[in-house]
Image (cartoon, rainbow, N blue to C red):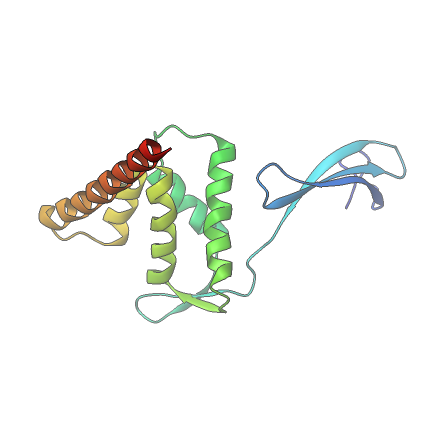
Length: 165
């Protein structure tokens, strides 16, 4: 790792710890030449994943595309950078749990939607409308009804749990 100040090629790790998001490692480094201290973050990269498109084409997984899609769905919605990073990490962890070298765009979309559903309902609907290519208002309404039903079941279930305690 090169020093950010003097560009010297040798720095040493002074301290390492798991970052607050739990999905990356934060390292404190010191330049061996000028003594400047700085921090770096390391995270797992999905390098060997191929995404199979609907038309059969194959592409390497792109974190940037995932971030762009999530950002678009979350446009003008309230969230913090840390929460967004955690969301991206959760999606990528779910991809890794599949333990496969390739996924279809449908599988990838389902993983994103599962995580967006709990993160932000409006962003979930936005993403679903593009991902599922709703043909008409009725199919959009069906998705909204499903989301409302699941939300009511979840609310009812959590109220029942609280009453038992």
